[in-house]
Length: 279
Ligand code: NAP
Image (cartoon, rainbow, N blue to C red; front, side, top):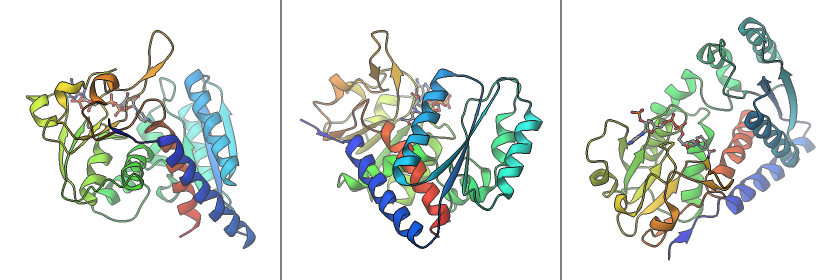
């Protein structure tokens, strides 16, 4: 039986720590404020934004909401970002992705001041992570590190295999595991003999975007398995990139979906926001 890594409980603990710290700062007259920009009416994005605002409220962080119509031009969006960059009362700016077709996502994300880039997507913050300097770190991989640490799982010296090399998950994940002194291998769609590589892992992080792709045949007995994937199945239930039923019996620890990595992403967003005011 694997240890089930409880992302719900761990994310709650992180949010409670943030709440306590924002209360201390507030008593000194220091407040934290996140500006959230949503363009268009994508239902999933609307839910994510609502949850982010709810988490802000819980943590004692002010949130400003900008809900713009789908036909908003790139120039208008860039103007709003410029305005928020200049506002001293705004500590963090988040543009909910994906943006409607016709808006250049890279141009928009690059326009956010690196000092307010609480998603950690700006090239300056990505560069800082790669050379080990302090900066904002992409929330999902930062959440994975917290899950491991707070579950008492040692990373230093371990064989860590990351499946996926996206800019928001796989790449920053590999840099963070390296920072924690793991021995890191990154796999992707061109990796040969994937199973041979994943079976070397003491810690296997899966961010591949394919439901239940990783079954027990990819996992060494006793490995720690972190499932970043999230998919809605035909029956309405959620599943990950890992075939939980097959892997759980042989893993030493595993994250469930839902209730694993997912809840950590918003908690780490709150963490990043607090870090921007609590230097
Ligand atoms: P992505 O941008 O689609 O990247 C998927 C990665 O998997 C790519 O690097 C791709 O390789 C690799 N890949 C695809 N097929 C493969 C195969 N057969 N063998 C080996 N590697 C393969 O996805 P993402 O944005 O990183 O997200 C990954 C998953 O995490 C998704 O399910 C997403 O919904 C979920 N997610 C969850 C959260 C959360 O808060 N829990 C946050 C973000 C993402 P190439 O680079 O060669 O194409």
